[in-house]
Length: 391
Image (cartoon, rainbow, N blue to C red; front, side):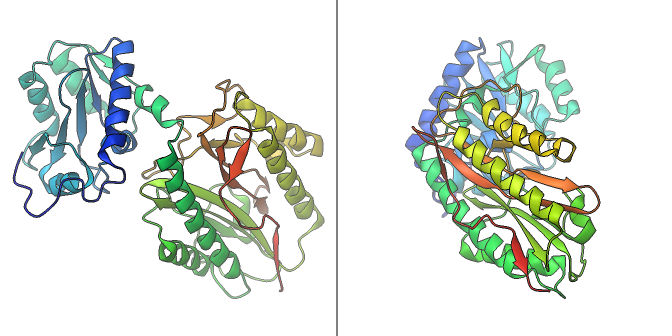
């Protein structure tokens, strides 16, 4: 520990202390059930969920040492310490300097806490766990067990406080897409559209997003995950817009499509199918139904329309806490064939059915939803129609 100066513990925390205490208690139950004595948490999303710590500086090493019994300890870089104090209610921080080897520092801490030789777990599927870090821990600690899924299981169903944050982010993304669609006009560039989207979402209240907007026009829109590149819009162009917004790291996302002039018949038909797919999937969502059911309902419509080859992806994915490089929680739960996990109230998803002719155009529409006791609730308010702009 070190002096906190005038920074008040938890002054910028996203939730009250009781919310984190409940999460940590459930994580400890999961550890005990897995036969682990301590878990080293390194993923920024899981760290945020358990402690409230958030920083764009997660490119440097940070970790929560969470034992089944005893106080948790947060390993944090000196530069991030006051950020940590402001965002969390954890009073035990182990601070390393830029001249330190953070993994050696962590191992020494585990030894000092009497945890060396115990059953230590770490999320082996974590994006921010380099192989070298894992090998160093294994060399120092012996067998390191896999704790993947222990925290993620807790994140699947959102609390009322979490859903409230998603509602806020959905309002921000509505503002962003509305502004972006208004900027689709002859003479504007893709950059103009994104500037309008980002400006409006941020003005509405959004913080930094976990991933950049996906915006493309003309033939560029027919390439999946293409994004803005200064192209100037012309008469006859399609425009594809998708973005997320964030409130306290909770993300809602939205996709809409536009066309300058009269769209070709195939684009109109594809858009009609996307609308039908989204409607069918939303109708299929209710507690107890397997996650694959909404996907299969949509896939059936796509196949019947003859667009199987134009749609080669899952229908939806979980949304909630995100840091770059993603705005979703798709690594936790997907609406996809073969996913038998039953839907439950409080789960939240982004459903983005899109159809494309590769290299020509993409059309699509999406919603972010929360599963309710009887079905689902759409969080956005934007009209789903293909926006047709005068040439």
